[in-house]
Amino acid sequence: MAESVPVCCPACRREHCFTPPTFPCACGAPLTLPVLPGCRPELLEHRTWQESWVTVRCPSCDRRDSWPAPELGCTCGAVVRLPVTPPPGLDCRDAGRAAGASTGSGRPPSPTSAVLRPAFRPVTIRTARDAVTAAAQYLKWLGFAGIRQSQDRSISGVDLRGPGIIAQVDPTTHPTGLRAIECLWLHGMGDSALGVFFSLAGYGRDARQRADDLLIPLFVMDLTGTPQPVNDPADELIRMGP
Image (cartoon, rainbow, N blue to C red; front, side):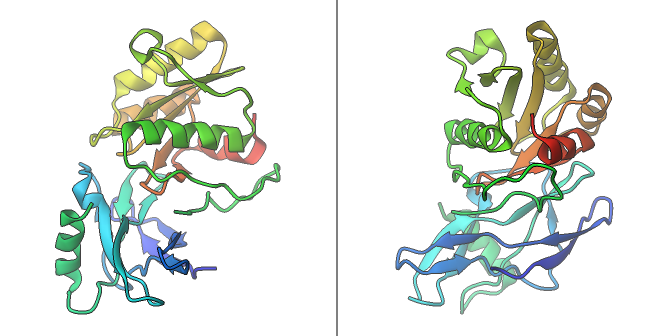
């Protein structure tokens, strides 16, 4: 298992213990992203697909390949990107530029849970559809049955449905806003269902506050497809399940 590294959120200064994700290299060896010790994490306010990949050398076969950059969702609502040790010949800044020019298996938050579950198997996110698929897999992992994708999101206003549950997924590069949270809550009220939100770029401060008031679980997802809780309702959902 990869060793955890300490991470300090630059937004709220909260300390976290982060376990770097491990991916299967083409040679078959497990490749753990080498998070760079001592580098300050980058606060993500706007996400671009190109900058969300890093180039890493496999220590087993010496192959260089591109992988989703390691990210952490803080409980304050911020999302931070962690720098990795660059391949030989590149310094820390060069590695970031190489990742921006480039085109897995993570794990869910450490459970202090009343519900025992197997390890979550994430879906690597490369497209908006992948993000919806990853959210559906996570809801099933939490214990929700019958999760299905909505046929027409523009009409239904939600991406995923199941008995007693609806979910919306924001795959854009901007933080999710207040209106999206309130719309999900209204749909949930109309369907007598719990609304859950997933976002790739985090949440605006007012959106986060409104979700807390309405008890809407909020999750952020990195490109490994592993959601992380960012508020108390999300933590409670992980602990207790449906």
